[in-house]
Amino acid sequence: MSYRVEMVNDSNGMKDFLDLPSRIYNNDPLWVPPLLSEIRRTLDKNLNPYFSGSDLQKFVCYRDNEPVARAVSVINPLHWKKFRQKTAFFGFYESVNDEQVSSFLFETIEEYCRQKKAEIIEGPFNPNHYSELGMLVRNFGRPAFFETYNPSYYPEFVKRSGYEVIYRMHTRMTTEAGHHPNPLHSKTGLPDMKGYTIRKFNLFDMKAELGRIREVFNDAFSGNWHFLPVSRAEYLFSAKSMFAVTNPSLIQIVEHLGEPVGVLQCVLNINPVLQHLEGRIRISDLFKLPAQRKAIREVVVYAVGIKKAFQNSPVFMLMTDAMFRIARRYPVIYSTWMSDDNISAVRASELIGMKPYKWFEVYGKSLVK
Image (tube, rainbow, N blue to C red; front, top):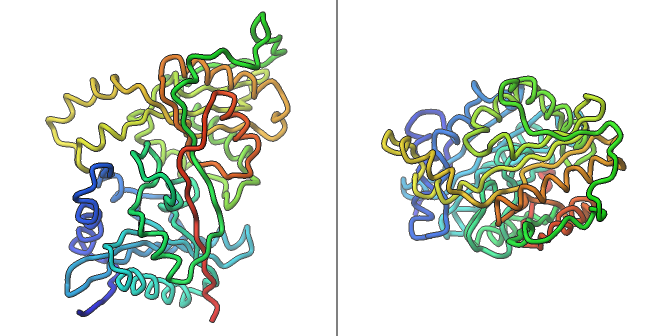
């Protein structure tokens, strides 16, 4: 057998890159095909402002001219500057069940990153820290929206290529939050909030609302692992299809004297809908999607952020109360990933009865020879 890895630089290579997962997961009833148009848009350096000034390369590994593995590499100078580490990232990794194929792919990507002066490589990030990340290592059941899913042999392939676990995280889930009262309530309800208010997202002021959310998240997450401030252009790009997966009542904004200080952002678990689309939206689907979306009764807590100056304020109580109200309408609630040592996130999830559901790992490897 002959092996080669090629960078994607034309439409044929991009087709091989996009079509490969459907071959790998062909007989897996749990796999949810992503929208190919969205993957193409995300990985377009000319469209996605995240890659402005960054190096993005897409790789496909061929075995006897057949595409059998793929991944991308990303080198972001802003990350090097903030964290003072010359780190490259890999993502969108997929491979047939052939360890030699996977190893050959990683060796090629690592050598490319060395040539770009990177000293460490980490992943998977699809394509960055604000997106899907990590590799599923435990509980390979039905995935929720924004939750990575992969064959069980992937983690072993990565480790055998010399990678070590550098970060562990998990998601949570509950089907009972709407059946219990908020434990933070007194007998008379919420105490006096003294200038604090909470409201849903205002669709009629969308750009300004997105700016308020970005302001809160950039402040709240500024000390998080690998976090870089999200630019206005990046956030508008990522929010382009936002209301295909959520609605204004699922986005709650807490204000103090008119200033945005906290955001609770939930999205619908649209995976059952995506599974039927099989990666493409056809004209006939457009007539069915509104009813299918309306029928969804599962949500994912996508992001929760409180500005640092307000993290010991009534904001937490208001957002927890909002989460209980959402739970009464949506009986199944998932979280996105949280680190095992994020005490505040774990505490908040436990208040609404969420229990650990799935476990994920991020891997790293030194590129210094």
